[in-house]
Length: 276
Image (cartoon, rainbow, N blue to C red; front, side, top):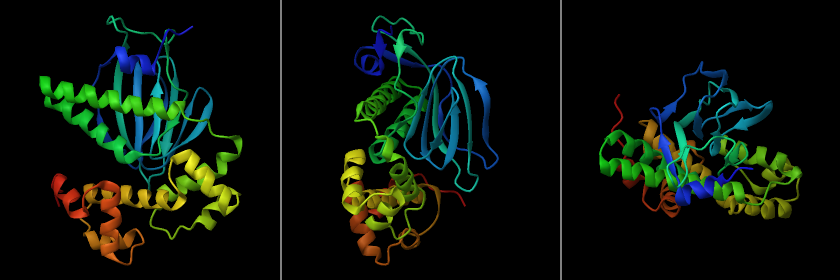
């Protein structure tokens, strides 16, 4: 029986990164060919759409999909070249409170995959992990390790949440469609139709799964996409607002600030300049 789990690692143990880590946008022709892992891998999807196979199981990949993979597992993955995956990746060892390396037999990790519904707090942690690691200083290592613990704690909380019911498959697919195309004119009746549920059932189940109302879920998906566009494109704020279905740029500014805590202009100023 495993004597350790993810929570015990976060509380008392240590995660030792063993190889270069980073955040990468996969190339259009990218695929992860069948490969048996030799160490633990943290593989977290921040954007894009794809599919993966682990241990004979197939499942979709989308924003918030988190894989904590153990040595000996076989991973295969591919993505839609028009909606390329953006992935945080790291190789790691898990250590107990005495500094002893844990084998898969002594460590119980969450079932694969764990799906997070709040990237607004999770993705900044992945950037802090990478930034702290790349600094190569004691302060940088402390920043990396603290951000990593917080990210793992968020994954643990999502894994411990109420399991999805068997009739949630269509609803999960509908919510993934919202994330894939947040600029569409989504309504609760349309989401309900895709999920095969009534409007009231949809509203109740979306809140149970995500902690948000359907309307708030759509808004958050739009704001998360707006943040990506500000980081990765030279589009103006007006162009970004229009691409996400906003006809009033000032309304977009208000919704962005209500979710992100800062205005779109303040958010963009924090991002590195994009070379053109």
